[in-house]
Length: 116
Image (tube, rainbow, N blue to C red; front, side):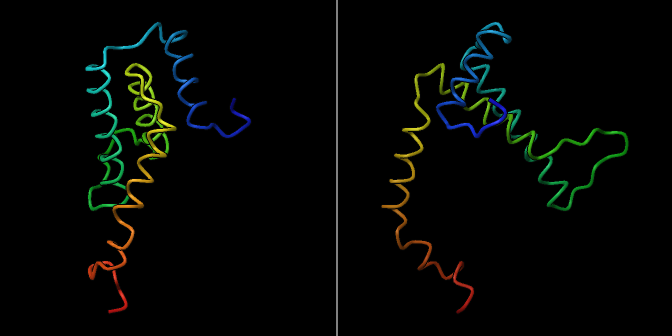
């Protein structure tokens, strides 16, 4: 699996296989929601220190953004699996929705139009 790119469906299968095997089963959906909040907080911590004004404290281990983002995606896949969400289809529908809704919105936003 590591030698090729994962599709979203592959990701969901990989997470399910790991959780049902090595992980010994899913946490409850509410526990996974709390874990997701925790992981997003870890992304925020890295972002604040690497791209914001915060600094790392002496003696505190540094986390890497790539690992923390992967943790978020992992937990999202776990929640999708246990609630019956096909992320591939959900993302496709979400992109379609955003494309219809925001077709000209950002082009016409003076805050984003730097040339004016």
